[in-house]
Image 1: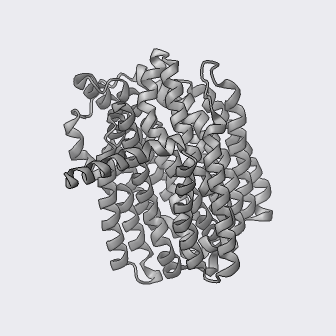
Image 2: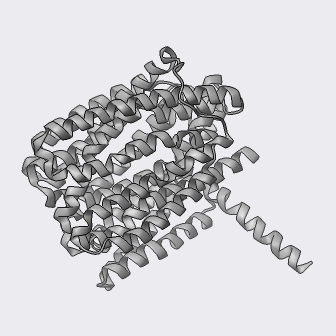
Image 3: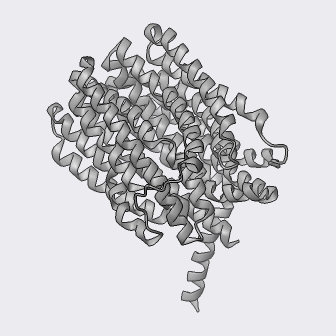
Length: 489
């Protein structure tokens, strides 16, 4: 019971952490989109996408591998320190190589002259991410610190943005604030991680052991990055900064939802890795059912909302200038469903079980298909084509991974998991449609849909006695009852 409560707490902490990590750009987007305009916003998003390739080269697939390997030895401080230092040292070398490549591109590629300043600023994220070793906190399951640290940094970043970003000419200041928001927490971790173990650079990095699986994961991440970033890059090169700005609006909402729901993977991965190494399938199936329950309950209302109030969400977040992104957001909601399925098969089943090769195959196939479709359709149909190709690629990943799931993995009671969330989804669907029929204000529709919709959805889950939801509610209700009992006595 204690272990289940710990998973529940870590899940909540990680959800809050990911929400704040993305709420900063999401909350500030209405302000920034109006201050900077679509063209400046397009430049910023192109620069982020561009530096993302070098950030990927620097990361080298270390994060996932480190969480899995350090999670296995987290009870042995000496062994943890040895493995963490070895992985950290490999990461430092890959970071230096990535920076050398970036410097060469900045010197010789004249076509990106107008983006050079932004690219240099955003490249600092590569340094801070590497030296921060945030994967150690995840491996140790210290999601409470991760969350509190993230909330603090996001609040400071919000104050800095409102202070220093006032006109369209302040786009460089916005880039610096973005770096602080994304990497400030990593700087804090340099000092905090000492409580777990010592992490130092070592020339005895045991490359033969660590490098092959790291490179395998890097290949997978490379294909996924091609999958994620090529639409923005091709859109920028063929359709211009304005359409990149529009598409970035819909992808912000898409990425926010995807990241929050997918946060369950990082909570259960260390524990699942240990269970898979022992082939403890009864415990594995329980944890997989917990993860799938989480994805269904949190993901389903998000899919409904993105479809029904797409225009209102776009207007509230970015303004009427960006309403052209509404259709791409609706298309991305279908992509989100396929992403949930592919993420469950891949990040929660394949990676912890050490079957990266299967996931790599699925990632490469989907990335190649995505790239080809982007090159063909984005120049003609623009941002809506980018959304469609993303959905197709996510669908392919799920189709490829499903047959590779081990026979011992069985999740029973799927309808029992779906029943209450589906009924709740229908209820909030009706609420949103009624709100749109009788209310003209996009802001009021959004507030009612999100606020009242959440209450209605939770109420349906309670009335239908959804086991997963009650598992979170009971501890709080029991504490309240205990406090009332003590006061009465």
